[in-house]
Image 1 (cartoon, rainbow, N blue to C red):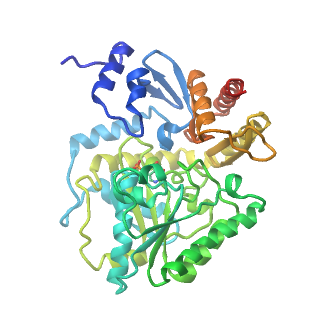
Image 2: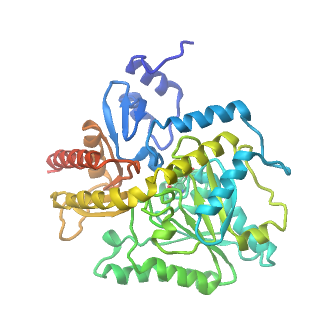
Length: 456
Ligand code: PLP
């Protein structure tokens, strides 16, 4: 067969793609009718497609390219590691230098006594690890009946059978026999859509107390863990009211259940601090990380666990692992990525220089007639599209139509924003400049104008 290249005609690339490639979270009919957008290169915050368009990537890929595209240092480290030791496993009392260094560095960066790292290849795999780990933890502590896990509707923890069950996405549950037993979902702290007449503070408390109600309903000696994202990402960048997390922390402390903070999006500077748990001031027993850990340059995820959890898990052979747990190339690249984030001051600059300007500019979108609210923490934000600002109303018909129209207008204007139902999301590389932020906002405004004209 002919191997195509980035210089091949777009139509040829699209036809071969549609013929043989099954895409994640994509309806194949769209690929066949319209063809995929083919991305060929990237640099900084900018993508190039096969038609030669330069596109501002306000989503950092899939919330992951924190250091920006085109960092030669990462390519160099990957090439060197492939030559020195392209693979070896970490099973059966074996280790290697990249995994040793990365685990130690993560222990240093992670807050509190989160000092031990179990590697995976993705956020989904790390959350599957967590599911098995918390149940094993309680079984080894002599409480095997503590195997129920509480999660949230509209949370996202991945799409494997375990992680998809922990997540609260009904579309995922509808396919493939999920959720698996022993997982329970409580309502999310989404004030804008579900808060009714309550103040955000009242609502935050009410939604946190659902956790306590669920613990009491299941039996407090039955619950192993509560898992949540510090800020829900794929659910639409839902920033919880200020009262929510302190109350959740009080409840998990009171009942002694493990808190798993899924930091797959929030980690590595996205919320302004190294971890969303620091921004939200919570003390997880386990953190899930992926994405920004390698800035997406290599597939890698991890569970970072506390001294207390490790003390128990370390007492048995944990019959769990992936061939590529602690893959040397992925670990070496992640370690170098953490060095860049730290030594170049990317995380600190994101918090002190980028985030305040982005917040001011992003919130100005609420002046647009289509925008009901803008929420943003650090470099993750979303706007709600509405036909009526005052009542926080939803569009008639299927949720997501307005968001879809707006996203398509963004594409046409060479801006990548994502839509979740009728919320439009940004999560740009941490290295975005003020000038690029201005471009982002100008293109978003133009796209909103065009979507508004279509929706009227
Ligand atoms: N957890 C969260 C919070 C996520 O946002 C994601 C992916 O978007 C995952 C887990 C799953 O990670 P992965 O796609 O690497 O399996």
